[in-house]
Image (cartoon, rainbow, N blue to C red; front, side):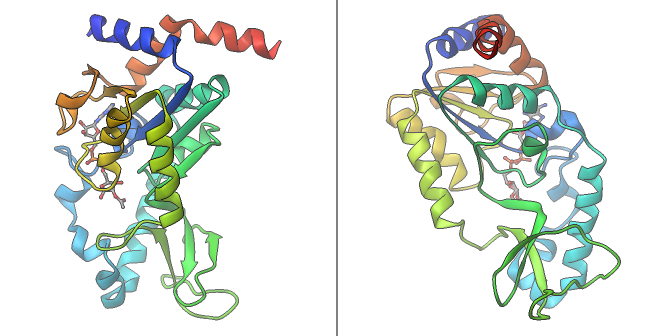
Length: 252
Ligand code: OAD
């Protein structure tokens, strides 16, 4: 692993335009469960009963119960050193974008600002009729309604079978194609279109660095594959690259 870390450090030292894609693995060390691992959520729960438009039509109360449960779970977790290093990166590189598949809001809590949330956010909801998006945490009402029109509101999450926001995906593609360095961290790379972003970056001549304890379908295409935990590997890379010192000087 040392060799790979050294390679990643060299790439980052000369990087100018950096794009990062994260998945559930970046929050694993914050104790937020991933989806597909041994203890993954989709091993215990059936996605088609909880995370599809049909499920919401059939049983909105059950779907809200599931999202209320996940909101509570995440509220009991804190960002970890991986979230923190990613937030520092955005202050250092002038051209930076974080693309996340995560809906847990931990990147925002670590103070990331340049962020594209591909799959929505657990703490947002929208009206099923008017489409207005609001900040929302489930309270006592098991079937929350829109304050302005009284219609049901739904979690602001991209469910299975739904399309991503075209504006967000367009920006994600642009940042994947224009960067010189692309980091892909903590994703099984099994869900489209997110999983094709690192390959788009590669085709546009970016160096692609993957951080994941396991191999994924994209591992064989990346330039550097670091088999380790994001919360341990990222702080080591950051420290070795010596970038933090430059950043501190710049802010003096
Ligand atoms: P997955 O649960 O599919 O994959 C998590 C990945 O994180 C796996 O490849 C693990 O090996 C890796 N991992 C585990 N611990 C890690 C650590 N400490 N550091 C780094 N990596 C670690 O999660 P995603 O790829 O994010 O969709 O799943 C994609 C989408 O599928 C999610 O956004 C979600 C789900 O259905 C929605 O919520 C719409």
